[in-house]
Every structure is written in C-alpha cells, then in structure tokens.
Length: 300
Image (cartoon, rainbow, N blue to C red; front, side):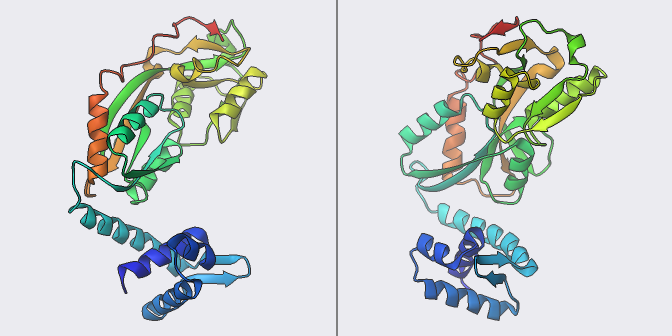
C-alpha cells in the first residue's frame, strides 16, 4: 500500500464516483479502478458498494476512511516540515461559523502576505466544526466560545455583543413567553446563549424552528415568524431590511467570544502558524464589540 493508494481511495470516497475522482486527480479512470481493486485485495475486504449511480462506502470502507484521513494529514505534516516557514504554500483547510465579522480583514491580510496558500473554507456550527477538527478533517476553525476540551488548543480572536432581534420596536422581557425561536442547527453558539438565557428566565419557547442560514432567519424575523439572537456586528450590516429591531440581552448572556481552535497533537503547519501571526497582528483591530450599534432598541 502506498500513500497514493490512500489518496485515491479518499478521493473516490468523497466523490462517490470513480470518474469524478479520476478527473479531480487527473488520472485515467481505469487506473483509479485498478488501484481501488488492488487496495481491496490487499486488505481482504470490499471497501465500496457499487451501483449504477456511483460508489458508497461499506462499513469497512468507513473504518479505512477514518484512518486514511489521519495518515494523509500526518503525511502532509511531514512534507510541510521541509517547506519555507516564511513563505508557506499548499492547502490550508479551516472551518468557520457563519458570522465572524472580522474574518474578511484577517483573510485579506493573509492572502496579501501569502498568495501561494490555497485556502479551503468550510462553514458550519461550532459543535460540528469542533468534531471535524478533532477528526483531522480541518486544520483549525473559527468557532464561538468558550469551550473546554483537553485535546484542543484555543486562541481568542475577538469578542462582541449578542443581541435579541425582533420585528417589534417595543419588546419587554415578559413578551418572551410563548415566543417562537428561529435558530441555526444544534451546536450553534448563538442558539445556546439564547436558550440558556430563556432557561434562566424560566421561559419555554412555544416552538423552535431550525434554519440552515442566518439570512433566512432574519427574513423570517421581519415577517413576524419569531425571534432570534445574533451578534450586533451582523445586524448593523443589514440596512436593506425593514421591521428589524435590536434589544439588549442580560450581560451574563450577551458576550460572544470568537476562538480559533486546532487539535493539540497535530503538527502546526507553516500555513497555520502564519494565520495565527496575522490574528495576533490584528489584535488592536479585533476589539470587543462594535460601537456603531448602541445599546437601546433600534430599528434598521
């Protein structure tokens, strides 16, 4: 078995297709098929269920995928040991929650200094991104903190204020009763803060509706479908929206901390090192909150 065999196997597993994997790897399709067959013969097991629409991993294939991802990550780390640390290149695969208001500034500085790095950015909720970092699927991720995990290194990036958002300019705490919560999937840091606040108030939502994007949540708020909680920095960018109002959340629930995390036992590539340097350089810019939205309920 060679490293290339695992790379081919992983490409087929990700694409669920021999032909698509061959195209991505710039290989002849018959070569990919032969390498997969040789790998199955060497391991003494079928790795894929084959059907008309493509390839699906067997249980044994899923086991191999977990190990191959770790091996390929470690192989990439070995190669990166010999790269120029001051001028990194190659691929940097990181994740991010949907709202990181300062991320464009960080990435702009990074790409200006290190144009040879090919960045792959994956969006998700905090819990999902944490899992992918722990399983070597991401080199790091921007998530909502705080978190406590003994296998994770975390680097504070900035803080900002969470705000309650409704379509009503006048909103009192008593109106929280029987409200519909409009939230992202479980594992979202903003959702957790909102739910913890309501729990502390002894309030049970009438219903909870999950969305895949914040844009759909905000549109639904303007139509009176329910309420949500998001960072102020996000709301202030939505000048095109009408009937959208911010309301202050109690201090113990309003602070949102953005962290960059990585797995402790992985080699820190030069690409990641330089990203952390950019974050440190931007510390003065990445200040707590954003003063352009005041603390009173306001309409946009």
